[in-house]
Length: 224
View 1 (cartoon, rainbow, N blue to C red):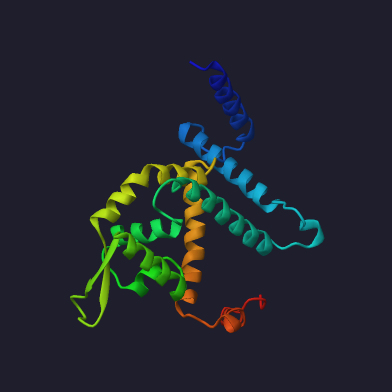
View 2 (view 1 turned 90 degrees about the horizontal axis):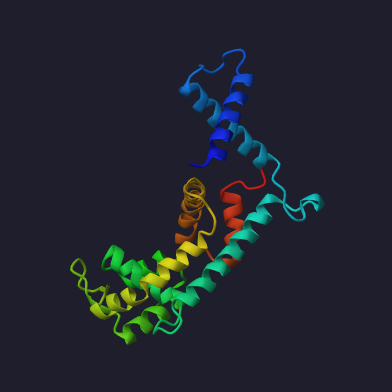
């Protein structure tokens, strides 16, 4: 048994008793747990409000930091993904991602698959053609629209995925770094919120020259 842990609990209980002189919390286990939870919340809130970053004193905005960190994290993730497919027949992590989506979501058209991976049409078509040439995906007539073609993952494609899956899983664990479970859940919540903001904008295929101006106006940035 780790007696230092017991000592920490006793010290925490003494602190609770000292701070709860006015009986704001009930003097039992439930009151103690509520006090601990609120204390941690106040601590996190305080740390968040005092968050610092390089260049803040010179006027660097939170938005600039967020954008930079997302770019950096994407590059780190790509580095690990590149390692995960090293020595295999995969050329890029995008090929792996396309196969994963076909396996997970079933058959879809070329444009559906391209949009699912947040690519422009020309880049997506190149990836799809490489996968077809590898024999990892195949085209077939759509059951809903005979004029359309749909893509399906082949048995060879599934085998290619299976052969690299362990390394890919290891890479994704490394990308999550030293975050604990609650931090991962909070990060998923925040990133999902950003995803739901950006995805509809991306799906509109706004011309690059007009993109920033259009989004800035439509969402009233800078008017708060």
